[in-house]
Amino acid sequence: FTKSETMGKNLVRNFITEEFRDSVKEVLQQALNGQETANFEFPLFNKSGERRDILLNATTRRGPDGEVTGVIGVGQDITQIRESTSEQMRIADDLSRLIESANAPIFGVDLKGLVTEWNRKAADMLGYTREETMGKNFVQNFIQPEDRKSVQDVLRRALSGEETANFELPLISKHGKRYTVLLNATPRRDAKGAVMGVVGVGQDITELDKVMGEAKHVADDLTRLIETANAPIFGIDKNGNVSEWN
Image (tube, rainbow, N blue to C red; front, side, top):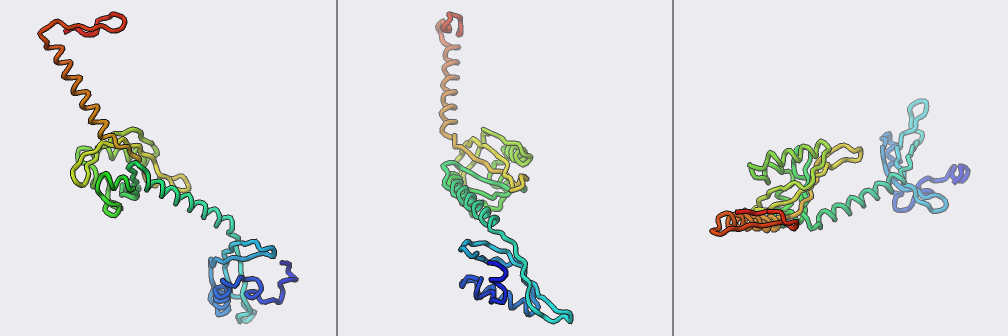
């Protein structure tokens, strides 16, 4: 709209969409009564129908004797900021759903070590609901005393910006069942890149640990059997070199 197309016309009736007319009119009336309004958001549509989001400061306009003569509105076009914010919120929502539905235990802590994230897999595995964990100290409440120092060291390194991969984390469920989790601890950063906490993504290797433990037990038994057998036993490798001699 050109200046000549707007001068002398009612602002609210001619240039504000119907759904926002009452709220804009109220802001203008407050300014006419001497009450300024800051950071009021409302949409404007240009002549071709394109929407622009405006952040408005409405200030009382006064004459030489201090009498109210009108209102001055100073706006900021925040359309791109609003679109960027909406996209960031969408991405954040997608990540939240991904964390919640992941088939791996995921937890998060803040700078003080208090739980900020606890997904469904972690709740199912350990028996603690999200509500039971949020805001509680992760190490003091969910790690056994003998493992607290090593886990605290991992979290401290992540808070310093250093990631830790494949750390074997022993966990005890609410009902006393022991789990072994292979943990990756990653710094969680804010929009400016500053560390604001830690995200831990785990893999349950409890059964794998049991299988490996059993295999080692069998191997140890065989070694002792060979060593104590009442018969001469030897072994060679594929090159014919002796590898066993009891």
